[in-house]
Image 1 (tube, rainbow, N blue to C red):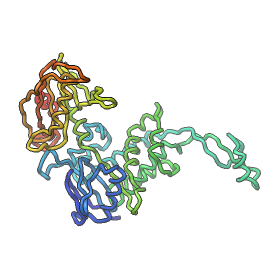
Image 2: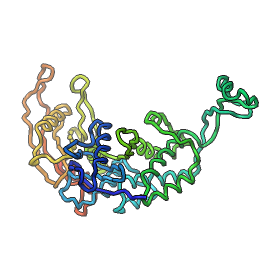
Image 3: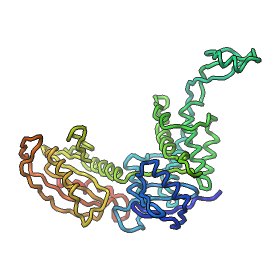
Length: 414
């Protein structure tokens, strides 16, 4: 079995046919994937693609493309694979206390393999603990009358065999939807681990997993699954199975390639990560942290800053931006946005927070003339000030900085 080739790129980088083993087949498959996701992942360019802010991994036709974050540093040598994994853990996108989690720092593992290994270990643990049984309806021929007799089906199936009954009846076993979902994810993992170290592990897990109906699982079916007290231990395995199934793309037609993508929006990760780190930093203080606070703005539209901090009677706004501002200067659109946040939340200070070399600029006050809303004048209650803040996601050892929350609070000067 041929081991997949691995190539690494960075967000916003260009990849063209002929680069690093990238072929027309891979390009066509990726463009179909991008169309399926409304053009969010890439920008088509001449004979290639330009990546956006999505990072993660794509596997297609024997090729693995790892897309790493880039906005925080220029050096390509930054160990972003491990950094991204730890960032996903911190943001709740990856369970931190999974059996075998010590393996995630091995350099040869890609993001898909990490999720695959976590999933296999979850299934292995459930199998050892004992898989649950559930009631389900089954319609087939039986030798004794039980359940509901299907008259039309019975006439069709048993015109000659009068000793049989075609019925719908309840069965109590392991062949239910929950296990069929887990099995479908196992089949996908088997397909995408051929030629890797995980393939033998997949086959061992499948050998111990009960025989269930092999079926395609839709997003609608996944949304209907509700866990109860008895099935609660399945929660994380089901989350991983849902992630694997929903990111599997066998039906993007126009080619024969089967593709699995696991991509994360760095804008969202940066926002969640900063929120969780700030929340950790304010423990034991009287600072209140509110994520995604919302206020009506105009008709159905609303304003929603990323983070609102409150201390005593003062309010502070933080809006995260995963990008590099030109000449470390904010755009006029961003400044207007922060001004609106200040006025609607009556905030004293607002900060646009970017990744990058740490700097501590001074707050600059907005002009605080009276402004108009619905034809009436509202004098400013406080003077509003804004600044650009820069903080590195990494410490000097190129690892996630566990003091970043405190550094953000220092920049806000709360």
